[in-house]
Picture 1 (cartoon, rainbow, N blue to C red):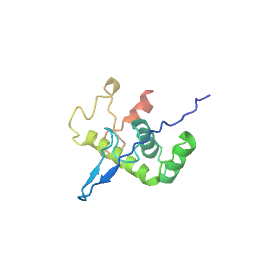
Picture 2: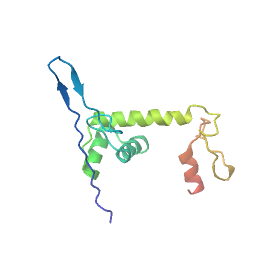
Picture 3: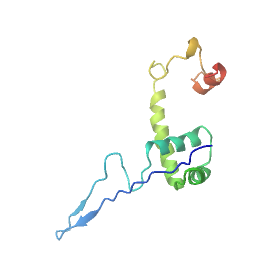
Picture 4: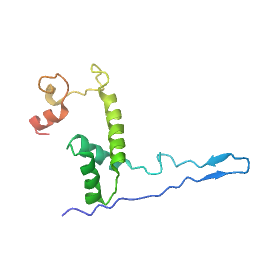
Length: 130
């Protein structure tokens, strides 16, 4: 059986105060927290995986996180997480000739998507039994 997964929720509040001179002073969020609602790296990774690899629509992704983890994620946040993951992953494929962007495949095999000539790492994993 699988262990029950419960999200760890930490609430951060960033207060703002206005003095008599009308200047507003705002508190900053802790490092790593970018907004009033911020999801951790594991939650963002699961969302990006289910959207990008399993092709769940945004609304079903939000339902899945609620059903599986008890984590209510609005569809706008799902879109935001996916956009961020897409932006970060795009950096890996920016320079096709860069050896760091395309590590060697096992046993010297060439892994390309059929007819496209681009690396398709999941395809060689399936073929080679990884």
